[in-house]
Length: 503
Image (spheres, rainbow, N blue to C red):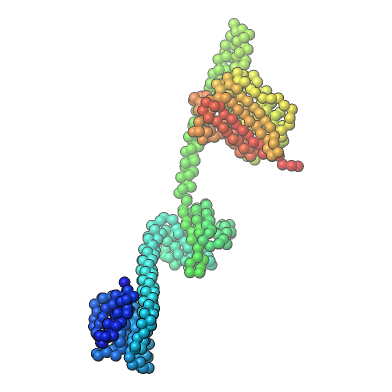
C-alpha cells in the first residue's frame, strides 16, 4: 500500500486531505511541520508521496523541497499554497517539486496529481533498480574479464606451444613466453612488432603465405586453417618442423589472426622409430609364417619324390608324388606372387592395365585351379557364359586377386564346401560376386582382415598376406569391395569395377 505524508501546520487541512486520500485506499501519515517531515524521512521511514503546504511556521515547504532535491531522494513533493505568486512558483520549479496547487484544493485534482506522482516515482524506482543491477553486472563482468585475462595469460605462458598473434598487416602484435624460447629470441622486441615473414625460410615463404592467405580472405570468426609439417626459421637461422593452427577474429574493429605453433621435430623422430619397430615386427612375423609355409611344401615334395624314386615304387605312387609336387609348387607360386605384390607400386600396376573380359579372366583362373588339391573337393558353382563384361585391369593382378579369394574360401569350407561365382553388368559398373558356405567371420575378424600379418589359421598354414594383397589391388585399380559375413553363415565378396572411360 502506498504511504503518503501530509505536511501542514493547520490541522483542519491535514485532516481534510487525509479524509479524501484515505478513501482511495492510501495509507496516510501526518506531520505538523517541515522539520518533523525531514526527521521522519531521515530516520528511514518510507513514503511514496509528500503533500506539503508552502507557507508554514518555521521551515517552509520550499525549504523542504530543497532538502529532498539536495539529498536526491526519489520522493515526489506536491506543494499547495493559499497565496500563489510568481516567486514561490519559480522556487518550486527550481527544486523540482512535482506539482504546484492553489488552495482551495479540488478533490479530483489532488487525486489525479497523486496518481501521476506515484506512477512517476514507481517508474523512477524501476529505472533506478535496473541501473543498479546493470552496474552490478558490469562490475561483475569487469571482474570476470580480469580473472579470465589473468587465467588466459597464465595458460598461454604455461603451454609449450608458441601462440603468436598478427594484425591485418602481418605484423606480430603479441606472443607468449614459449614463442621466444621456440624461435630463440632473446627479448620480446626482437619478435613483437616485426613482420611474420621473419619466421619463415625464404624458399618456403611463398608456399606458406599462399596457404595463410586463404584464412585471411575468409569471413572473420568463421575460418580456421591447419598447416602440417611447416618449416620455420629460428633467430639463429636453424630450422624446425611445426604444425600450425590459425584462426581469425575481430577486436575493436580491427582484424587479428592467432596461430598456435607446435614443434613436431621430436614427434617425427618418434614416428620414424615406431615405423621402424613396426616394420621389424611385421617382417619377423611374416618371415616366420613364410618359413613354415615353404618348409612344409618342401618337406612334402621331398618326401614324395624320395618315395617315387625307389626301385619298387609303383605307378600309383609316382602319380601321387607328381600331383603333390604340382600342388605344392602351385602353393609356393601363390605365396611368391603375394610377396612380389607387396613390392609393386600403383604406377607399375596401372601402366600394364588394359580392357579385359571379366568372364574370360575368371575361366582362366579356374582352369589353373582345376587340378589343385585346394579346390579339388570344393564344388564350384558358375554359369558358363559368352557375355563380355569389360573391366580395366592387369590380367596378372586379377588372377592374383581372384586366386586369393578362392583359396581363402576353400580354407573357410575345409576344402569341401560350395563356392559360387557370379558376374553381371549394370549401366554404371561391372560386378563380380564370390560366395562361400564356410565358417564365416566375426565382426572382430572383419575389422582386422586387411592387416598384413593377421590370420586366423594355425601357424604354418597361412601368412596373413592374402587379404592384404587383395586390398592393395582393389585400391590400385579403384575397385570397390564389399564384404558380408557372419559366423556360421559363410562369406560374400562383392567386387564393383569402375565404369570404363568412353573413347
